Length: 382
Image 1 (tube, rainbow, N blue to C red):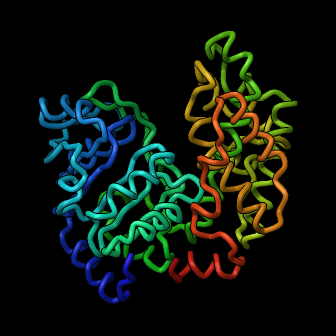
Image 2 (cartoon, rainbow, N blue to C red):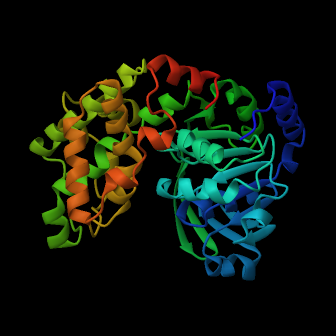
C-alpha cells in the first residue's frame, strides 16, 4: 500500500464532504445489518450500492428496486446497484461501509485491494478487536497501489434484522458510536464526511481504544460455552443473560474482563469494566456483573442461542479473544482465563481458533514495543 501525503488525502476527503447528499455509499454485506444500513441510507437520499458475496441473495433487492424498511425508520430506499462484483460495487463509491462478520474482514480486504482508490474511506461496522489493523495489514501484504483511509466503529449503530431478501426492520439506532481511523489523525476528516448521514458517530481516541472497548469479548464466548449443556438440552429456551449468568458464571466473566482491562492498560489505554459499562449503558447498579445483569431490564426476555455453533463463539473468539491473548503474550501480560475460553471453544467446535484468529502477526504488530504500536495508531505507518 503506497503512502500518500496527508495534504493529498485531506484534499480528497474535502472534495467528498463538498458533495453533501450526493456522497455515494457502498454497503458491503446484505445480512441483517447491511440491509438496514443500505435501506436507511437510501431513504435519507444518498446514492447507495449494495455488495454481497452470494449473488442470489440480492435478487429480492433487484426485483423490487430497493429495500423496504420498518421500525424506527419507515420507508423505501431505492438501491442504485446490487451486485456481487466487488469492482463494480466500489467504482465511484466515496464511503465503503463494511457490514460483515469480523471473520470476513480479512478476505474482504483481499478482494477490495485491487479496486480501492486514494482517499476512499472504508469503515468496518464494527471492527471488533484489531479490525482496522488487520484490514490495513492485508492491504499492505496485497501490495495495494491505492491509499484508502481505514476506520472502525466500536459497535454497530443499528439493532436490526433482515425480515426478507428486500426488507429490514430497525429496532433501534444507537445515540452514540465511537469511531476511529488508522492512523488517528484522519478522525476529524472522516467524521466530517460521515456525520451528514450519521451524526451518531463521534470521535474515538484511536483504534486501540475502539478495539479494547469491545465488551462482547467478555459476555459472549464464555457465557455461551459455560451454558453449552443448557443450550443443547433446551435449544436456547432460557433467558441468555438473566438466567445464563449465575453467580459462578459471573465470576469467570469478571476474570475475563480483568484480563481485557490489563491488556488495555499495558498499551496505555484506560477502559471501563464490563460492570461499569452496564451502569453507563443501562443505568444498571450492582457490585458485581451478576448483580448488574439482574438489574438490567433490557436483558430480560432475550433468549439464548439455539446452538453453540453461533457467532458469539465462531466470530467473537477469533476476532475478540485471540487478539487480546496474543497481545497479552507479546506484552508480558498473562491472560490464562481468556486462553482457557479459546481452548474450550476450539475443542467444542473442532477448530483451531488460534490458527484462525487475529494474532499479533495478522495485525502487523509482531515484535513491536508499546511505543511503536502507539505510534502506528496515532500517526505512523505499517
